[in-house]
Every structure is written in C-alpha cells, then in structure tokens.
Length: 500
Image (cartoon, rainbow, N blue to C red):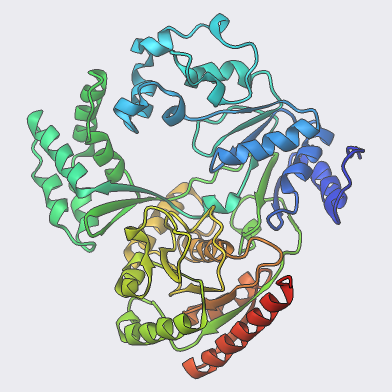
C-alpha cells in the first residue's frame, strides 16, 4: 500500500489506512471512530487515493473544517475546492436571507446574477468560494466550474450533493442529532400580518402565538400549509422581503415546541448513506451498524475519562419537580470546589438555576474570566468550541421532550429506519452528552471531573464504555469527597508543572 515517504505514520495509522483501502475498493460504507487529533483526515485521504476513489465529496458541518482538509490534501498532491451554500455566495442573501434558497430553485432563470454568469469571466484557478465572492455575478453556480476539476470537493452537509466516486461525512455524530430551526414570536406576527394583507384567513395561525407546548402540535396540523406556500411563492416571485418563509419552515418541521418567545422546529435527521462512504467521528456512542446501513466499523481507542453518575437526581419529566432542590444544592456544592465549571443541560432546567453563574441566553460570547457557565446542551457552545474547565456537569440527561420524541419516532418510521425509537431518544441524548463533555476534554492532557447528574445514565454503561469510566455516587456527601480529592490532585499537578 502506498504511504507518502515524507510523512511518518503514527501508531495505527498505516494499519487503518490499509483496512480502509480494502473496504473502499469493495464499495463498503465504513465508520472510522478515532479521537480528535489522531489524523482521521490524512488517513482517509490516503485510503481514497490508494483505492482509486477520487474525486470524493467531503461533507462537513462547518466550512472552517475545509481548510484542514485542504491542508492535508495538498500534502498528497490532491486539488481541493471548498464550496459554500447560497448564504455565503448569493448576492441576494443579505436582502432575502433564508428565502434565497427557494427563490434560486424556483426563479433563477429570472435572476440577473445567474444570467450574467459567464465562465470566461471566472479566475483561471480558485480553491474556495471566498475567491469568487466579489465577482458581481452568481458565485454559487460559478463554483461548479471548479468542482469539476478537483479531487476533493468540500461542502456542508445540506448543500445539494453531487455524484462522485466516494463520500466522506466528517463529524458524522452531528447527523445523529435532529436539526432545529428557531423563529421569534415577532417574526411570526409579521408573517401573519403579511398573510392578512394577501386576503388569507389567518385565525388558525394566530392561535399558535398563544399556544402552550401541549396544544401547539395540534394547532399546527390545522393550518393550511399549501395556502401559506402559495402566498410565499407570490412574494418570492416579486423578490420582496418576507417573513412567510420563516413561518413555512417552522410549519414543515416534524415537531414544534416553544421556549418563551421563541418557537423551535425540530427535523428528523435524514441520514442517506450511499455505497463507498466513510463516516468520521470521535463520539458515536452506539453500535450504529445495527441501526444504519454501515458495513464495517474501525475503532481507534480514545482516552477514557472518569465520570460519576449521581444516583439521587433525575431530570425525567415525571420526577424533575421533586429534584429541583437537590439540583440547587448540588450546584452550590460544586461551585465551592471548582474554578471553572461547565454546566450543560436542557434549557428548561438550566434557566431555573441561572442565578448560579453565567447563563447562555444572556451571553453573546464566552468571557475570558468565568466561574460557572450554564449552557444549553444543544446550544451555541455545545459543539465546536474549546472551553477549558475543572469540572463538567451534565445537569440531567439531555433528552428531547416526550411529545417531540413521539413525533420524531413517527418521522423516522416513515423514513424507513431500523430503530426509530433509538434515533429519537437515546442516540441524540448520548451524542449530545459526549459533545458537551468534549468542550473541556479535547486535548490529551485535559482531565476535567465529569459529573452525570441523572441516575438514568446507568442504563448506558455499555454504550459509553469506550469513552467514560463510569462510577456511581450514592450521596452528596460522597460527591464532596470526590470533589475535594479532585481539587487537591489538580493543585498538586499545577504546582509541579509551574516553572520556578
């Protein structure tokens, strides 16, 4: 097997590349589960080259990852293009926002930017959408010119897929968590006002503005979505700014719930796995081979962190009210033992204790100095952010609400998945948990104390064993001793590592 002579493989890399090569040649779908920084990108690129599976479509959550893929590709002499969606490339995006996707699909034949696109006006070479941003015509479709001439095409998960010899889905665990769309009440009110001006009857839509989470799904089902869509198309055709698109996207969600003045639509993940696909991740907590159409799993051992399951608390809906006082005591005690404490949980829980520290909804960014952060388990800071911390607390198992789960199960059944219940409940909960812990445990020398504050984690000893060394804690007094020892150990380690 070919391996570049100027790169010395780390332990296990050559062997994994060899196994990947064999599997790719046979057209298999493979999950490569390896820790952050191990070199999944480089090994996968080498296997793709060895198996003659280029060009490849490399799917990412954030295009910033594309720069890392390009850097490794260049080492191997492979050309890369990072393709962006319309939100970064369409000149109309500032005016139309998310509606630009629908406008482009339906009316691009009228769009002056699309009509003015001429390939002979394009730069001879480009490696990224950034180099096309100021051309004055349609950069979105201009990207196709470069995509056809490279070996590695990087784009986000949700951009229209193109046909290649293979596909890589980077940070695959993101697709195991349902997507969300958020719409403020003011935007919904504006959409209703626009619909009224068109002569549409809006009484059924107006009811959702005052609905609680129990009645909201039933009210949404009564709304004539086809009529809303017709009015939306008329606005798009006129290229007018509208809030109707936001309303329509919310109504199309598989489930809807409300947090104060924000409506949240949840979409079941549509995980399409084609032959010759490599899934890359460091945190897939289940044997998904039995749930999705995966032919083989390659596991590289990760550093296991010690974690403590608290046996006397739970955020379970039917029991949570009886545990609020215990959670309050818990956070008070933890705060006395840690300098930097990350607390993740569902918003319905962390907002109750927001007086204990800095609450996510009141933050625009993470400040340099902080003692306790209370962050949403599926919020802005739960993925893709490094937050060094002494202690990480998962404040209740971060399940979706029961009514949301029930609706997602129906959607996953309709999509034909083998285990719709697991895809709607345990898999997103555990994936979210590992992502949150990962904010403070991304480097080999990081050693935060991990507290899983919900007895339900006991059910997942097998699923989490590759990542966490789980230990039960029976009382707050026992936890205090653990916290005390952790603090003493951290202080000794810091004193020995500080130069004199």
